[in-house]
Image (cartoon, rainbow, N blue to C red):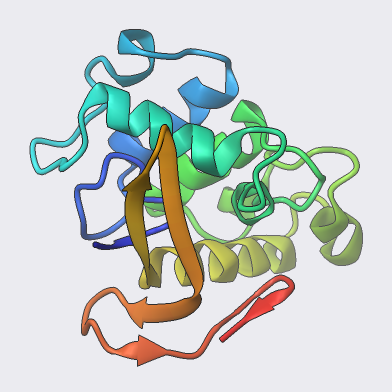
Length: 171
């Protein structure tokens, strides 16, 4: 079905700090199984602990083609204290410099371009996360992971096809 890429528990709706943000932080810290999902799944979740683990593995493992989209600060890695923190802060409503302060890696290309901890960097990070939160893709279970069709995106609220530019991927 159609889900946002960052909707790790499959609950639908907006990105949530205490589910999606916490799941990203825990996964990036290396937690798996029950340690990953305990008290971090929405009551509206459509995925089990095993399905959440498989989905996150599909998106976040080193060889994943989707990992770069969750590298929110564009430093080449998905890290709990940068990308996980950014997702949580955004979902809690922090914006501009409150979003970007002390939340990017030293080798972040976005921080180099806009200035670490600056309002401009926070605006750019906010735009990226907002776009990722508004796009839905066809995400279907496949083997021990998931197939994600990035060729067609849908507006998460209307369900209508939409154009997007996500790094090197456009529709």
